[in-house]
Image (cartoon, helix red, strand yellow):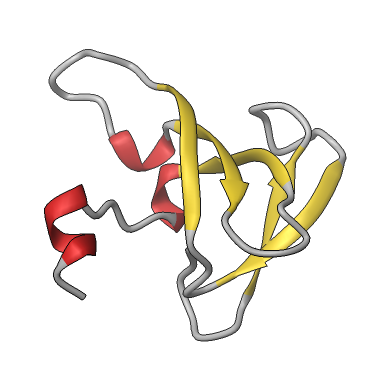
Length: 81
């Protein structure tokens, strides 16, 4: 997660920035993506897609973040680290 090292990234209750925060993640936190809301038009900017995530470590916060804060790794990449 995140743009700058250790920068706090708000996790929202619902997929919109005007929603209450349920917590924060930081750059480098590992998350599980449970759902994604995105436009499927070819010209759509997927960095603005909302992702329903859960932090993989305590406090296991669950909520919504925009795709621009996520680096997607496939299972093969993760397994080789």
